[in-house]
Length: 294
Image 1 (cartoon, rainbow, N blue to C red):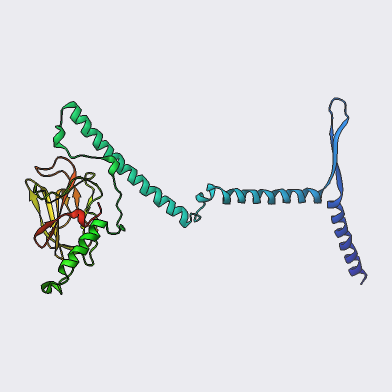
Image 2 (cartoon, one colour; image 1 turned 90 degrees about the vertical axis):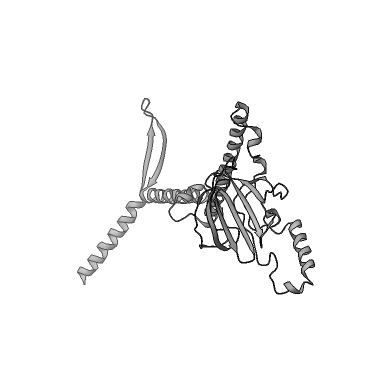
């Protein structure tokens, strides 16, 4: 019993000695070396010193965390890139692509002007390029007033036509994709036997099928270069001319918006990279601008 009491007393004494030691205050003085006068002094204990270090470390952690959370530095942390930042990156990439296309269009315009001034090209031998009329592709555009009026007029004319009661409407369940993202340089003019529209676009830019269908012709024409034609199930046929390269063969099935060729400058009648696009309905040419928002 006495040994246990001695051990307990010794343990308590050590415990009290430890707390007394860390709470014991030390005097820290600053003395002028020349006069040996005490300039400044303060008392500090080990407990106060460790508490101050812990508080400083905690404050440093909090400040660092706030800086990371409230500044763009957080984007450099692995796995922190959120959906909003990804969306901004995608939007920036789309804007950069649009600016690049506009810059190429402007460079083409300047090169044409330079060629005309230096006499290397005749003014009437090029398509007009207006960089200010550049239009981005937008496949969610509603029907224009002219298109709506045309459809309404056609439906009124065919309403009492018994022979076509079961026939599909001209544009029923049909949404026409823009064949290429470009600027119209020459419009549809049946009097001049220009049965389509010319779209100025960048060389080797993708040409897409305006509707779902089957490729019925691919070949090279001396006047129109590489030509591809697609037959659609609603009676329409689309024709794409002056291509640099054809990506599909006869008999291939294509979906609306699928790339079928690349923009080029082939054929005797071509004076620059562009796409000549024609739209035919049951053997009769129609104005593509009445169906597609270019």
